[in-house]
Length: 147
Image 1 (cartoon, one colour):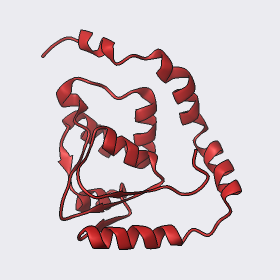
Image 2: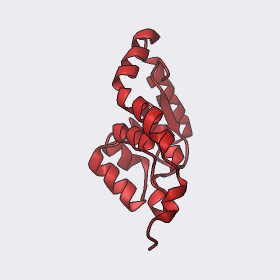
Image 3: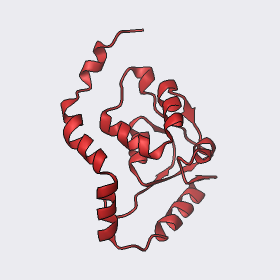
C-alpha cells in the first residue's frame, strides 16, 4: 500500500483493468469531454477476480456496481460524479490536471500515519489478494455454460 493518498486522473477510456486500477486509487477525477468508464467483462465472459471485486466495491456504491458489472454499459464522467465514484467531472484535459493536482496538494498529512490507516482500512482486501486470488485461475471461466 502506498502510504499517501492516490489519485487517478482519468484522461480517456477506463475499461476493465483501467477501471479497476482507478478504483484501487483513493480518489478519482475524470474528463467529461472524452472517455467512458466500463466493466465489459460480462460481454467477454471473464469475471473479475475476488481482489478486483474488493477494490471496485470500495469505490462504487454496491447497487450501481451491480448495474455496471452485470450490464457492461459505458458511463461518462457526469454520471460517475453523480454517484460519487469520481470526485469531479472535469471539462477537459487542462481542468483534469489542474483539479487533480490541486486536490493532491491539499493533503499535508504524515505518510506514516496514512500508511498505517490504509493498512488497517484495507486489511480484508490484502487478505483476499494474498490468500484467495492466488488460488483462482482465469482459465476455468471458459468452462461456463455458453449463451
